[in-house]
Image 1 (cartoon, rainbow, N blue to C red):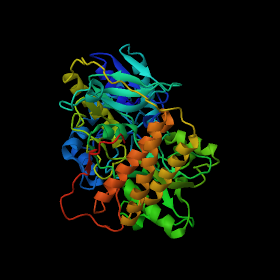
Image 2: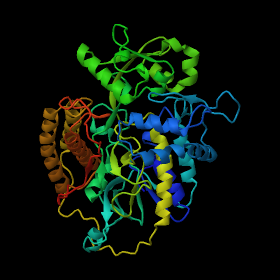
Image 3: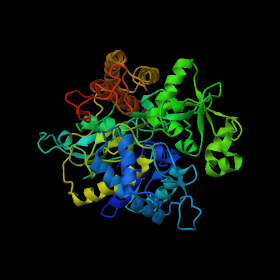
Image 4: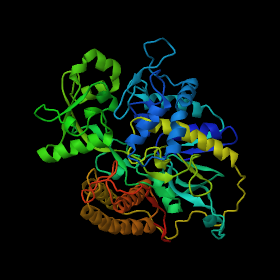
Length: 527
């Protein structure tokens, strides 16, 4: 199992009921996107809400590309998912109607208050609870600081033909070592997080380099809808801040977006104003910034009052104070940043990929619930529901792994890397290229330039990868290059604008029935 966020740990806890589980995580166990999730989990909880309303909101935000059966599974399992987390010990913020009620936020795109949260540090509270559960389970062993490199295919280690190909584990690099280790398993679950680090500006933690998606693609698994990268509208713009986002819930509670002169602008772009879906808000901010030449816009929440702000957003308030901003009396400078990829490893309603033995969940998977644009706070709900379904299916399909390893990992004639600067320069160039050419607004010319340059960069990285012994930095560089190419290829294939994908050469939605963008590796190179 790769990844130690919500999806990974929930899968591990359920899988451990039948056997032993190895959890591979490339940093410490709590370092992941789950830990940084501020907003909460969207689920039908209030008396005035319904499954039908939540489904409708999700489908509307998804731009006609959501897979409705998956949305239905997620939404209808929402209350049960919340109850299971509470039973495990997650402490959500209580409502005003007694100990059994929960406080509910409202976020952009939602027609009702349905965001269940733990103040403004929901992800951190969930991670705290789940990590404790995992560490106390004797059937689970956590391997921290292990960089997953590639999936192990049965044919590659047994020397047999591709007939009956399946995934049988993962190659990973232990800390402080250049010797690759093999982890064999009858079922492999990828929950390695998103790919925000493909872009120059992102709300994601440093580990979000698209590892799971890249490994699955290289192994031959189908990936879907990689063109749909969600840009969070309101990341803090500050010279010293790194990847700090200001939660969607701040606008949900009355925060207003303003230009330098104090005027509002969102009413020009959507009837819901500042509560419009994220893609609309991010695009509007991008347009206004380009028109004015300014590097940011303001988020004004001063009207809420200090007591309300400190109660509802204690973490955001304290963090902004560290940067010299009192959000109770000052407007917050914000800018859009890469936040969440709606595409990923294509999976079915049970988390199964197109490769036998490989399951996926969380942000590196594509269940289809997000369509062309993720509705705020649906991601944590998706992670709970589908990771538990994947674990159930993996246990049901469990087969004893009885194989002889004939071809373990070999470094061949590779030597130790001699110039770290090459990795650093390529990493920086990919991220700047993606931000400039494949960002919020795209064009055919930009995508063509991006593809041409990425082909050269991939060739350089491929040669470097096979000449030198593998390092964790080189693994991440290889993965962001793979994911960047997948995003470019998917964006070029979509001849329309839909949801998070906006191409000025195809500014309208296509007239035909919308289709997913699927990619599968065809070349036989080592990638």
